[in-house]
Length: 79
Image (cartoon, rainbow, N blue to C red):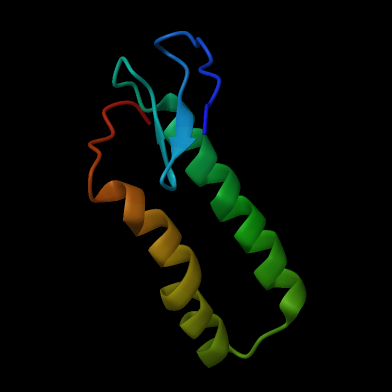
């Protein structure tokens, strides 16, 4: 199977394997993507009207995992 390769600037991050990576190593796109995911999750959880225990379970099983995964292989120097 042939795939068409796209040329992108070195400072532009692309999502690959769930992590935004830029060839020059900057993390601006990764930080922005994680921020958007966290804000979207926050809006969704607020409208759900969950009891505190269930809300905490949602935190630890969903958004924390989403935010932790890219942190294992990145060091964010600009936030």
